[in-house]
Image 1: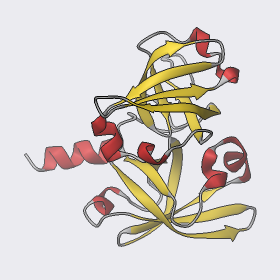
Image 2 (image 1 turned 90 degrees about the horizontal axis):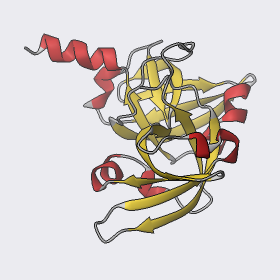
Image 3 (image 1 turned 180 degrees about the vertical axis):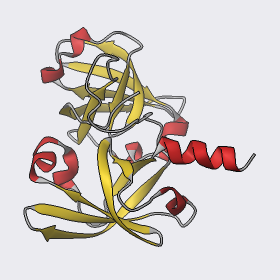
Length: 197
């Protein structure tokens, strides 16, 4: 489990397509001390829960399955692409964001970007089917960042990115047309499941 509070920004060192159709991804993140990671540990990479398969002092490797590639924006990453990183939450740590599983529900597309005081407002377009999980002032995870929904208009919603978040995540690279990973509030999905029984 994660909280959506990004620890560090890493960089893709290499992406190798495997015979199986999967991607072997090497991620540089010296400041997170990847040699301290455990093999098999879960790491959130742009909001996607991935497993550490190798680690050194400067990088770690992970394998992205075909299912992950089909449901996320990982297929668009290139060598030197920046990624948001978060290690799994500690039981005795502060819960700064909200409950995040690292299981991406869908991708969204940035439809509008505009300045809003010192912050930047982003509008995202998603499928009509997915819009039911988003409410005004609810929580959402975008590329691994825990954010609050400002406004919802049909299948479009907005969030504000404050300067601190912009400086410490990959959100500063978001542009109109960018594809992002979305994870909806887990509580909403559980409530829906119970109501449909």
